[in-house]
Image (tube, rainbow, N blue to C red; front, side):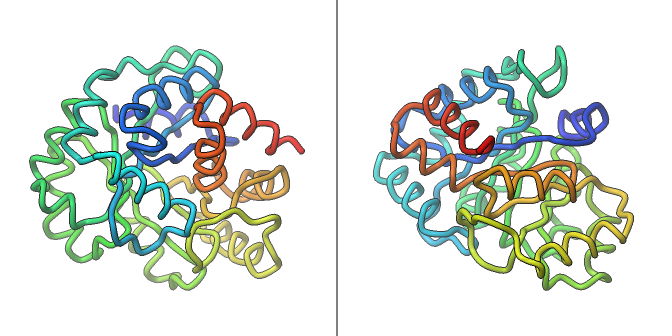
Amino acid sequence: MNRINQLFAQKRENILSIYFCAGHPTLDSTADTIRTLAANGIDMIEVGIPFSDPMADGPVIQNAATQALRNGMTLKKLFQQLETLNRNTSSPLGGIRGGLLPLILMGYLNPIMQFGFEAFCQRCNDVGVDGMIIPDLPFADYLETYKPIADRYDLRIIMLITPETSDERIRFIDEHTDGFIYMVSSAATTGAQKTFDEAKQAYFQRINNMNLRNPRMIGFGISNKQTLQSAQQNAAGAIIGSKFVTLLEQTGNAQAAIQQLYEALNS
């Protein structure tokens, strides 16, 4: 079973996923950051593929991607770094007991297409990646071209929904995807928020009432106890990116960054 599916089969609530950008803060820090997150109870890890022209990323992640590119990070180097892990990343403090953490790559279509999509899927399979998030992948193209290839390599392509996504489209996404649905908390770009307002709460409730087949994770804006609890109450769990990336930038140390993140999430 794909490790994403295994995670949601065995843990149905309070899942915590962390995003960071490969090659940030240093070119060779990627594998160490993954090991550190795994050792500190994180349930799922999203590794960002740096790109020069992101659509959905706010200034924090944009800056991290710019620095990673300047450090010399490429998709080829990322796969080489992930190869050193090769499915040996276990989480002794949380997640799937005795199992392995799901690893997801998040990036834009341009660098993946330059690499070659089937070659990309093959390398993902080789190094232990379980799925991918490609925000600018058109859904029609996903169904016709990309999903059949990803399925051959047992990879999940995770789709995003926002408050502006229609119920009809959400149900169509739910019908034709597997793994989980990424609920973007707002139509804005990534970035920490102090609270989720009434409009966002209404959006969360609307999706809850749809009784979708796939589990959901809420991301964008989660940075403290209040936003984390709101996400956990309205979905299977939360995805945290900008807050962790900021702490990683400030400390230059994954262990210090995750400890400070936990402190922020409990205050």
